[in-house]
Length: 73
Image (cartoon, rainbow, N blue to C red; front, side, top):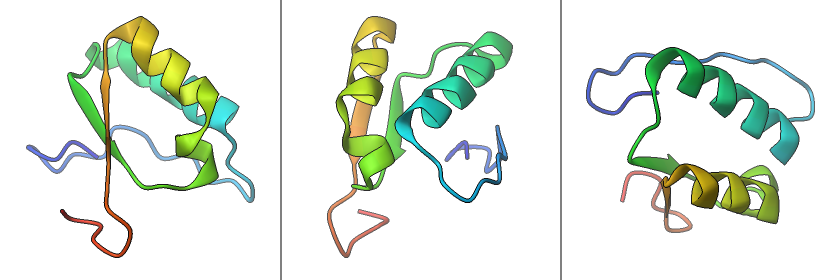
């Protein structure tokens, strides 16, 4: 979700969402909308792994991890 416009940029329902699925969805969103400056994520395994970290590094995107128990801070 775009925090400024509150627009949902992608909806991908799955039973198991792995880091590879996250990267695929991000690549599609980047192709349509361009590369974001940062992405706010929680500390789930699909976000905290090396694959997303490598994707963010190669695309110049900052990963902004939420603090446990504080999803909006």
